Length: 191
Image (cartoon, rainbow, N blue to C red; front, side, top):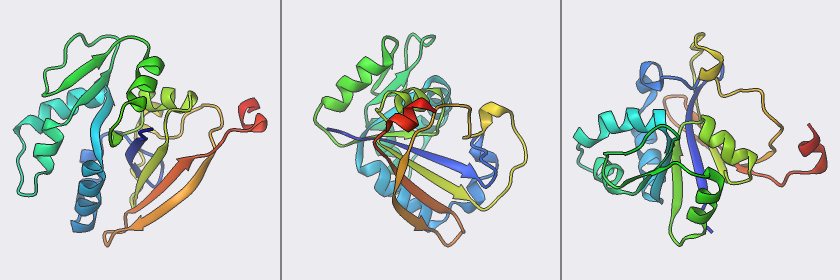
């Protein structure tokens, strides 16, 4: 079965909103290599409407020498949205029905990992239904000190246990913490 991996930039104070304004100074050669390996280990992207709209506005015009932009633009994209009727970016499909049912079916198809950038309502729904397999937090050495509650990774939710799957440290000071979803117990479910 395919895995769904959420890859999220985060500041030391848990800020995940608008990473273009604070995370890019830390994107070095190590981060580029990790991002490339992560993208090429996947054969589909999953995103919510807001992430889709941001990516669709930027990525179609991008090019690079190592094929990252070509991969991003050509791979299938699944957009979870109740308001978006059509997705114009190459190979995009809108998931407007039962998200849990459609993602369960998508995970059951043969293929590589399914990659999500960011952590929002779609990731939380998948987590609540046991469909999010791995969380990769790119912790940046900066306190942003701003944002609304929706801009923070830490939201009022149930308890969802994870197990450390690995750590990667970049020369910029960014640490990627990779966690796999752990089995939920009666205690976790009750919390």
